[in-house]
Figure (cartoon, rainbow, N blue to C red):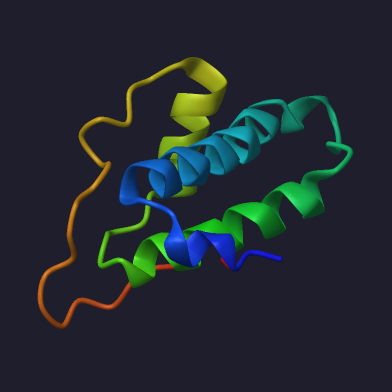
Length: 96
């Protein structure tokens, strides 16, 4: 189902990753109002894209940052396309 992610450019993959994470972040910003319908599928999509993003050597983006972006419009430009240091393990925020 997600085989196309292997052939996708870094720019397109990052856009989809950020879209998925920001949808989760937006939903999280409304959790004070109650449970969000469809949250599980949103997190699954984010997790798959996050893993692919990490395999390209990038640091993943935290849920807090996606909540600030998706829920409140704060920029992610300072955390996009940041390569991990040699030996640095990726953090999979969507799994956490």
